[in-house]
Length: 416
Length: 115
Image 1 (tube, chains in turn purple, yellow):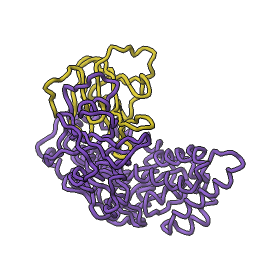
Image 2: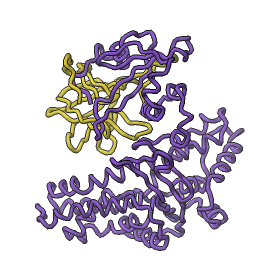
Image 3: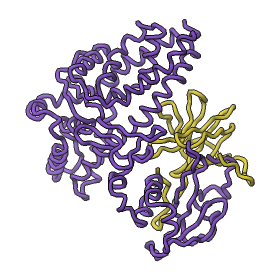
Image 4: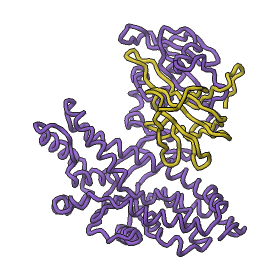
């Protein structure tokens, strides 16, 4: 068992961090022929026969729509509306699938392989490959060595790739697919199709191998393989590694596999968070884009048309983080100095304001408490948030207490 | 990290999650199962960020559903640390705590802060 690392081995940490962050954030176009070989190896090391079809898609969004079409989206609605709703959803989803899915998919794969996209192989790949490699490596390397490689190599890669990009892609595609289905059905049947939306979301998760975005754990096993010479122990990970080095996200089923191109653009701020002030933070070849402001995914219009941000839109935004970004882009000082924005009270717990021109259903003014995040940002500044509070409250402390109504006299000893 | 001068021991806050020490019984409560080896107190809808405790670092932490708005967090001997992607970590000593999500006023019914 390897119980400690040599100086030469530890000196290689930085090299692995850079290599795998570069792979994870690569915007190089896919080499589809190399990807196909990688897919075949993923299946082989997973103890599976190679898929009969390997389909190229320009983005994960296109891929998941295609997969759901091929699976003939199941919709649980009453018989009387079932067919029309089903057809409507299908038509809408197909309309969203662009030419990145080849004619052969539309014309032949659609009909001939719909059964083959039912059985995800992700779980068996993970069970055969990742779990067994993890166990083999654990038996060969002490806990302290594993912990230090993970802390000094993989954590950095994980933060740059998984936390920053992969999670945003995952959440964005999932939301976009849901929106696409929601948009195609009328209000009256929305409740009925919620099951199918969840099925789509589940499907999205259950079959995906994240390709280049698996860089986090692959940096760990890459180091174990190359620097500690655990060749046999990490052998089965080679297919997943090849896939990461050649491809974007990949959806793996028993007889068919969908390989996505990498993102073609990736913009981050100086702290490594997804960010672009004037365009998409992530963009794929088919135009599928993700907009983000210092790591927070936001609707496209907030980035492209910030002039449309109004006081009404800020205060009616229910998500506190998106509201914060809207306030930031509108201008905090500009908002607070508007004639209709009336300062009521301030103390250590925040600043209480009323917006006199905006009335709620009870003809009460809109009231908000401006609070400051207790954890400063890396650059030293602290984010401001606004929380809607009851307009009958007259002090900031009262307003603060109203946000934790079931903790009497809430006065946290420690806040972050 | 902000230390309040007139603090109340047993009260903690990390972003929109507030904790207060409790003697409520967890018997008959349903356990909220961990996600990926983490006990998750709250999950951001847009951010995907979570207030959570790593079970690999501190096994034995449990979370129980008390009602729609409150969970009970059981911290074993030795304490545990609540982590979050954007907020500083907070060490919580051994004990049982009510875990609350911050509330915003809405004329049609208060709602939890979402992020």
